Each structure stands twice: as C-alpha cells, then as structure tokens.
Length: 133
Image 1: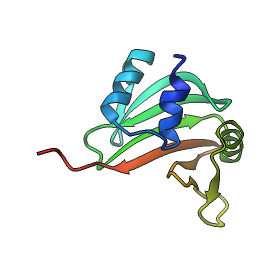
Image 2: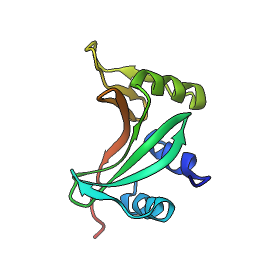
Image 3: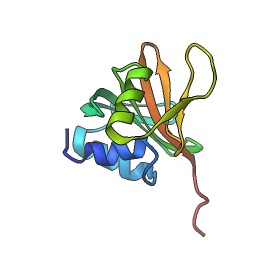
C-alpha cells in the first residue's frame, strides 16, 4: 500500500477533494497494477490496503461511460463499524437517510456508506462538469 493511499483515496471517498477519474485511475494503476475489470461504468482495482482501520479489498473509479464521476471502495467492515472508524479517525459524521433495516449513511460533504451484503461500500459521486469549450 502506498504511503499516500489514505490521503489520496481516503479523502476522495470522504468527498474532501476534487474528483478526477483520470487521476485516480492513473494513481491506482501505478500503485496496484491495471484494473482487473471494467463493468458498470467503472474500472475495478484489487487492492490490499487499510483506511480508517478497515480492510479495503477493491476500489472502483468511474470510466467515461458513466454520467457521474465517482470513486468507491469495498471494505470488510459492516457499515456501522466503518462509520464508527471514520468518525474516530477523521471526525466525519454520517446520518442514516431513513429508518429501514439497511439504510444508506450520508455525510454532510456527500460521502455515502451503503450495505454490500454483510460488508460495506463507501463512495463519493458527483455530476460531471460541463466540457471546456
């Protein structure tokens, strides 16, 4: 794991930095090798890394077919565990968006934690800006 992983990927997942899919694609390719698949509007990278004390197994970065620019990560933690770890490490708080058994958890900057079976996915997504003329 590169020493900058937490700053680069962690801050992007918390929506604390600009989202540039080309930058993240290049960063992950240099750090972990080429994406192992391209599916669902994203490049998928296998990683062995830790963020906020949670094991990260995969990171996804939007490709140019998606109408959003995003970065996402799958962790081995439950959403509750991940939420607590992020709050303890960075002070970022999340709130459940509804009272369902498996609610999305959203931070003020827009980062989202979702259930992924018994694990969690965290992501930051934004609409693409207009192209420069």
